[in-house]
Image (cartoon, rainbow, N blue to C red; front, side, top):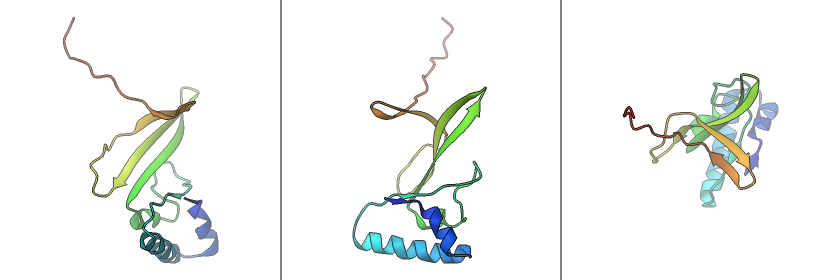
Length: 114
């Protein structure tokens, strides 16, 4: 796990430099045949990355958000990209509890009037 790749933006002034460095790090991790998790902070809630290049280097991209609704903070996640894996394109609410992360599931309605 690399936490937080946003720090690369401090070292490099151009997004292309950040992208080159991320490619280099990613190539090294692939050579080592390890699964890696890059953590990044974003400023804009609907953006995919901070420098605008991170999403092009990764095999998958998941954003975790904290937003306010009616004075209550809610958490949600969105899988933007997951190569070679079908996935939902909807936001999913989740809670962090004693047992870890719990993804909220929506109840299906039968559509019958009973």
